[in-house]
Image (cartoon, rainbow, N blue to C red; front, side, top):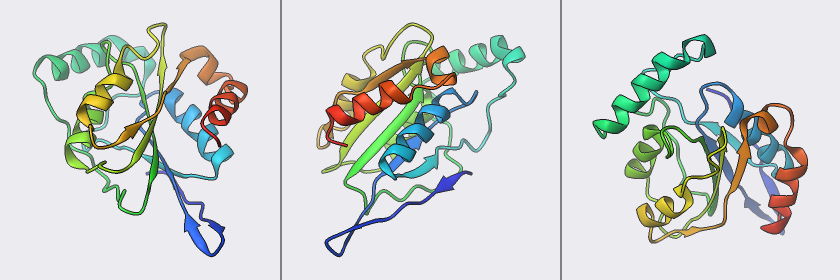
Length: 174
């Protein structure tokens, strides 16, 4: 698990925020790193107990497996514990799979209490934008504030999305 921790002291108070992300091919990870670097946030990967095949040559097998998870409403277990207790603002990133976020993201929302938190979603995609996932998060977490997300096309994410990430962060006061 890759975890990079930044603590920022302001007026004697430690202010922290995490960038939680799930990524198989590294696309969402690239955007997560960009956000963490620009905001000095903690970078925390959401890791499944049973890892997905990250070989792009096996994409069709991954797609079948992911569709099966969606069809059966499965909840893959998260390998690493993620403590969100001390965080107020939480970035959450994921790719779009089968027109929604990966099932492990549902597992995360089932497992952790985001009440009173501000969720700042972002996603990567192959042309489908966010597919309504920001609204799904609002429905899953009605006691959290969910800001407008950032949707980054895969090629842009893999070749540097610094300007679009920076512009989006500025729109949210970062």
